[in-house]
Image (cartoon, rainbow, N blue to C red; front, side):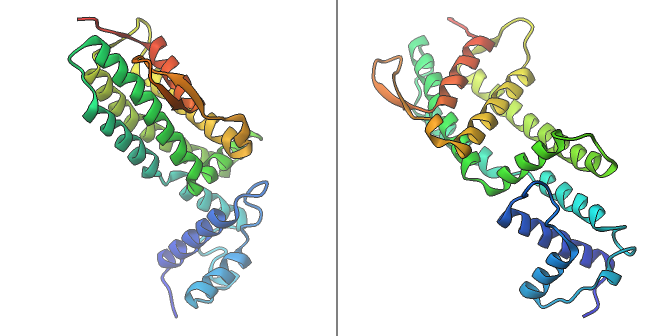
Length: 247
């Protein structure tokens, strides 16, 4: 089978990304060799590829190939965490009484509790997100190279797109509950603080689930409810960033 340069490039990148999702990074992408990707492509699709058809034709060397696969992985946004968060928030908004101050306080507390649990739960269950964080951590552990900068730029672009999406979500929620930002703070500040806390909690849970217990706390209505540690932190961030309009 004769494949075009672009078709072969796409097949090898997607196969390499799939190997990383299944096996993880190790200490980096060093296990992502041409031979292993060629063997997997042959196993999955019966396509045989040689070094001669790739090196110098598509990539300069194996490191160049690894960089492009990592760039693809960190550039793929995971919509699941957004979808789960939005579904939980929408359920709360459908139940909340926003006509009274007490109702808004209760609804906002429930948004933090249920939306926060849904968000970190989606992160903890995502294989692609763990891979993203692993690549990000690997980049942070050593000086930038030409290949690293390519991956780093893709990771930054993904964070920017994700932050823009959550900016809009948070603005909508805060409008419903009639919250006002405190002086000197912005929605983007809030978004970055929330997403950084969520990632930290999800990573800690992945490594040591015992360190992230479920708590029981009374709500504004006095009823005991289960809370995740992230949800507690999220509620604290809301209280520090926003004031509720009493009118």
